[in-house]
Amino acid sequence: MDLDMAQVRAFVRTAEELHFGRAAGTLGVSQQALSKRIARLESLLGTRLFERGGSGVHLTPAGLRFLPPARQALTAADGAVAAAVVNDRPLRVDVWGHLYAPMRTLAQVAGEAGELVSGHGRDLPSVTNALLRGDIDAAFGRVHPPLHAGLTHRLVRLEPVDAVLGADHPLAAEPALRPERLRGSVLWAPGALDRLDFLHRFADRFGIAGRGAGVNLGLAHFLGEVAADPRRFTLLPADVPLPDVPGLRSVPLVDPTPLYAWSLLWRTGSGHPGLSGLTAACAAEAGRSRWLEYDPARDWLPEPPASPRGDQSA
Image (cartoon, rainbow, N blue to C red; front, side):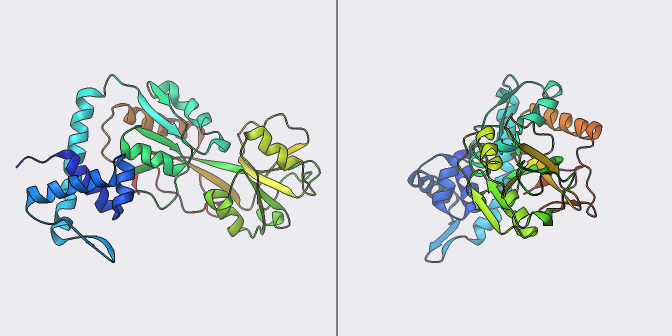
């Protein structure tokens, strides 16, 4: 029998999400269209792949058996399409985490990575959906769980983070600070803290009870809000160029030094030839610039770093 790959893709995405609405959203189709594709696949195979009931959606025994080879079939199909039509198209790379200027790192490897076309995703969920739909080929930013099972990521850079505060802050004249010394200050964020994983985890780990948020109208406006209040501070990678905001100070954090983890992210099985060039360029620059140095006795990460030698499936 001949399988319709659109139907197989609908099955795999629904098996990963175990939710018809979410699966339809990641594929960019209506829930009704997704249900029809799966029903046609079940009719072709002569067996039910999902159980739908009050307790939610679950794979049947046949669905569990079908899922691994279905994923392999999709990977092979995507690779075949990529081999035929992708070679002449630049690698489409999106970024997120714009407050931390992700394009700084990509710019350092762009000359060795081949032709790139960059986008500007809003956040990790929006970039994840764009990858799963095939709208982009790869993405760059901070990866944190939970991450979709159909994606792969590779750690690229661990970047030391400074405390940024105004000149009137009581700790502004310190040459360096331990994170615990900021407990009496207010961690200022460019949006709801529970949506900003790194800042949220930092505050929890080091007991920062004072937390507040402004409106993200760009880095200069955001840091102007920080500098205007002697109680506030925020966190930025040490190499991020600071805008010309009067009274702004950047103080290194030590014992431990927080590290912001940058990763490349792509759809598992992606066949774009530019992807290998980008990962190789990142690995080469990481070696030259010591981007992946990590000492657990000296540094802090929200989670231990994945091995830089191999791809890590989410």
